[in-house]
Length: 112
Image 1 (cartoon, rainbow, N blue to C red):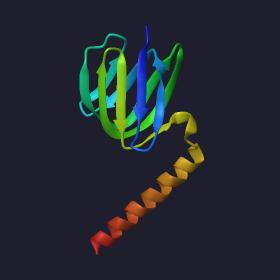
Image 2 (cartoon, one colour; image 1 turned 60 degrees about the vertical axis):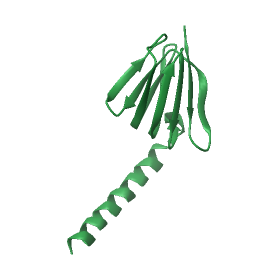
Image 3 (spheres, helix red, strand yellow; image 1 turned 90 degrees about the horizontal axis):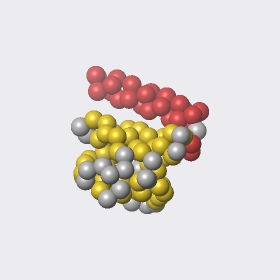
Image 4 (spheres, helix red, strand yellow; image 1 turned 120 degrees about the vertical axis):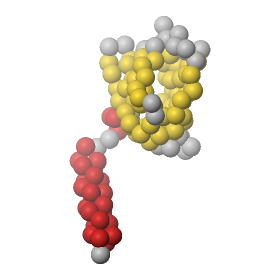
């Protein structure tokens, strides 16, 4: 038995396919969802969505939103999402370093 998972942002559909299981970061912690899960609506936290396809696990970065689970369908609407396979590690590291320098500069400006 499978679940139909749809992950979308205001601009695009990021995922629309059947999966075996997911692990979702919510505002109250992580939840695992298998077929025949009890119906639930929840806020989605910024974090990693783990998706199981047969014996393979995939990841997706989610930028907060909402999820609805019921009748073996999972609908997740988030501000933004990126498949783990689409993230360039070097580009992500550079963006992190730039953000850290910006935050450090803001600290110095606020101290004066």
